Image 1 (cartoon, rainbow, N blue to C red):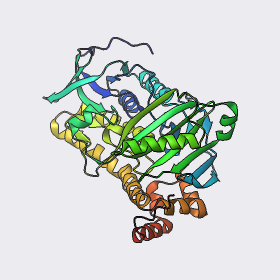
Image 2: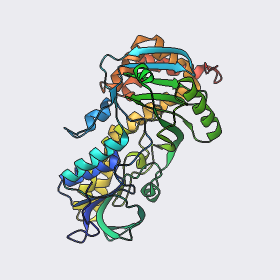
Image 3: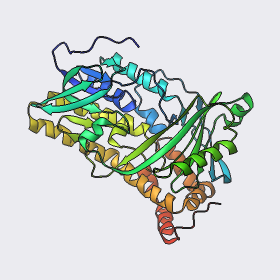
Image 4: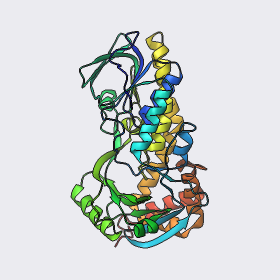
Length: 402
């Protein structure tokens, strides 16, 4: 992607600087630029860059993409295989195949290009070193030695965000995900084509996944941070059982995922956070792309309002509105997914049995994948309430694992 010279803004001060060119940051930059703001998008890596991510786009993610975004979909999941630590496997068929398999490098590059088309200046290979606020201006210092000025900043620099530390984001759940991208032969590719796997694992709250992408499968495991040796052992076993251990992986990486506390701040003065930097993530599935796209849109609009604010009262009003919008749109989803995660950690066998043996449970999950309902909608059903009541009565040890 050609890079313009953007060390300084023509007027000396940018309206909005966005840190991080993932789905949240690229979306925030596109929206801010579309709202008339002089916008700069900074990314520490060189675009396109690899990102540890399953790369499955559910309906809410697809709906949040800008219209006409040029993006290659390598497969669409029509079947979902669920298993309980390698046992009790069952494959269910989606009523409306929706979950699209993409590569994050290509998704993020396409979203960044959309931001550039909207008028945002792009500068990759540039990391944030420090930021500070004074007199209605945020000063951003970069790894290239630049000192940039902006009226508003959006931090979308991932789960290890510097901006999140500045804002004071606090987390209720931190997990470790280990992932590989493995080339597969034609026979293996045929076996996975149109089908993804979700396996509830042996560690509390853990699962493994296989996402098909033609001649490559993305596979991995995730569990609560704190026992990396056990998670590595599960990953080894999981890949071996599914025939994905032999080929040399194209990528073999890990990263932390974080879910925010309900009272965690989303802004500090003229600095906002969105996406993984704000720890906006589904507690149970650890799905974050839809949260990133939606919060990035809201953050871009909020940043535009902050950039236009004439005084600190107007700045605070814009910041409060952003907090309220996240609270109204995404927080109910996180509360519901937290309740589901609590049930899952306590009794994964119960969750597995409900999904694979009770057709209404699968239909509701399928509706969620297709964006016909939300996690909050699922958890409000009588079936979910009954499962929660039953799950809290069962002993913690009844996990249904071998």
